[in-house]
Image (cartoon, rainbow, N blue to C red; front, side, top):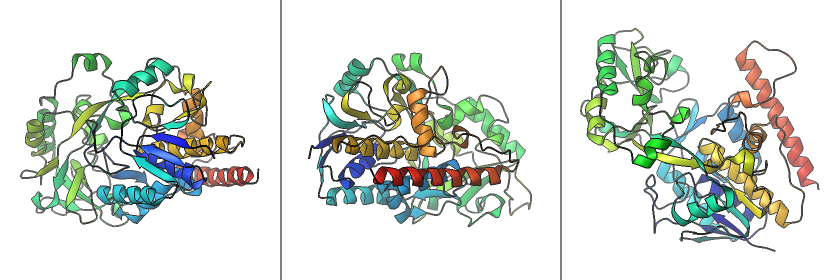
Length: 437
């Protein structure tokens, strides 16, 4: 049996390696850590989560929940590990990052068909490989990709700060999920109008970290990970209708809805760390402490990690890739992860599953499987291979990617439930047919 190579031990690479090994294909997984780290990574383990510990909604009648359900049906390693180390987060699947990475690493290290090599690949393999080196790919590998694929597109991504739980002023902060749905898994920092406007003024005038000259020219912020200061600059009420929306919350001190509210989401099971939801930022570290310290309850907050912004790269995938993430005209060379234009942790992992399973089928002499477009995974595959517009941009899972139902249904909840049921039925049928070939 031919051996396969996977380059990159992030979410996509781990899923690709697992899919190949589970299909009986020996695989060598190359990961440059701990010998070398990208600007966004810090831990030595595989599948490191960088920007957030949230893997989006759990409920099936949502884009994120549907995608994870489809991934489970395709043997996802990461969804299994995520559920094993989940932390309370209302209707979302959030994880303890350290435990999540450890579980994924342990599973791959223990697999008899997986060999992990801690080295950086500096050239593209000729064949039988999945390239999942991530959106921060640089150096010789970046040059090799550009030589093979042509120029790459780019955008900037940002991460939110993390604060220590025992440094919060719990006299001002209260626990509640919006509309009291589920357990009170979020902490809320309520603001009155005066507090909010003072915070907004400070935020919009705070000093940002400098960008390199070549970065300034390429600066395009992805809407799904917008730095909070850039969002605030769009208008005084933009934050109140975005990450600071107070809808569904009630301040127990006043028994009224606050003017605005900053939400904190638990980062680990112990609840010792909290993430500032929606506060991706490129402010200087000192400015983050000063401005975010104006948020009620955060005056004496200990910042365990400050927010950072980094440049991400992605391929012009509609020109380069087929729906199974294979490079057109190549000998079994696949790409996976955010560099293909899928946006989000689970979307990246899902692309790794597709690429790994597709390569395994090719190595076994089997026909490729193209998932139906009415599945969330299939819709993402179609988007990266065909594009959704003239100007290709990264795309995360969303219900708008799915074909409309034959009948018009006014209730969004009911419509989403039917879309999810249809997707899982289509996926089950496609997987069953593929398994009988």
